[in-house]
Image 1 (cartoon, rainbow, N blue to C red):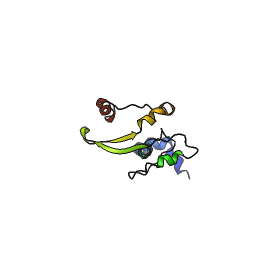
Image 2 (image 1 turned 90 degrees about the vertical axis):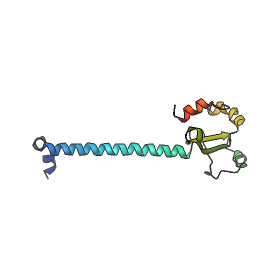
Image 3 (image 1 turned 180 degrees about the vertical axis):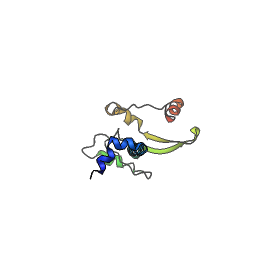
Image 4 (image 1 turned 30 degrees about the vertical axis):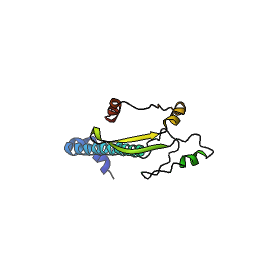
Length: 142
């Protein structure tokens, strides 16, 4: 019954310095491993969520069928739902940029005129295109 207080006492720690140092180091290593694993898990969850729904911050509803795609008339059907304010069909494809060493990228395409009409309400910046230098800088993370 007195084993735990005796083990944690300063007198015991002074007598068995190596054992005490190993105990403290193992606890510190366990806490560091736990913290690192938690950080990696959170980062992986966030990355998977961002990959699964690339427009999560932009749209309240995102309808997708993976790589199979959806019929073009589905946008008209969704627009007829009373609670829906705006429907914007969007092409989302994963592509490889050959000029940049087959770097993977996400290609987004849509009706530019429709996006421009609602750009102020959605907070998006819509442009006709980007320069090659801008695309290269963005793909390299700058």
